[in-house]
Image 1 (tube, one colour):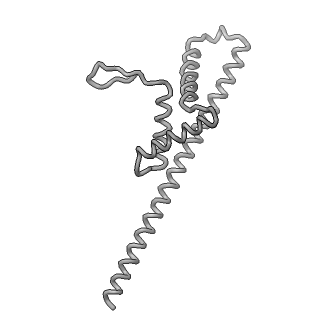
Image 2 (cartoon, helix red, strand yellow):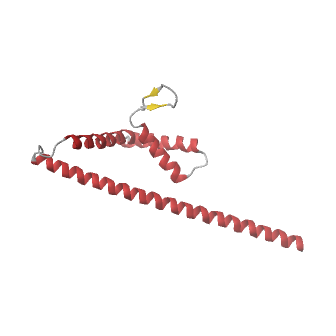
Image 3 (tube, helix red, strand yellow):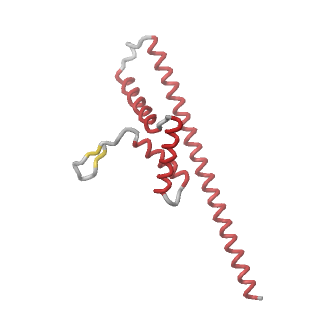
Length: 148
């Protein structure tokens, strides 16, 4: 639930909405568009198109991942270790492996995003330097034309 400060109004956030907004926010930060509403519209159109072609809904998938994450932690805290059967131990270790893989893929994703941001910043700096060079060369040409 979401609440508004100094208000007794509570809104129920639909499942998957947070994941959609996180994805949009990540892409906005990555792309740095000039027109954010148009970029958001194009982003959601692209998601709808992908969902139609592949029958894969990222919002639904994200909700399931979140649900599984929170529920698994809740079950692990409540379940005493003495009562574990041999079959359950295997499932717990495989879940630990999956969690470790997810954490490492998250780290990889973070590293990729940071690398992308650095590359984009370097390229923007390059473009800005090129623009300054052009401005300086056009100023020099104007001054030489005035002196002639």
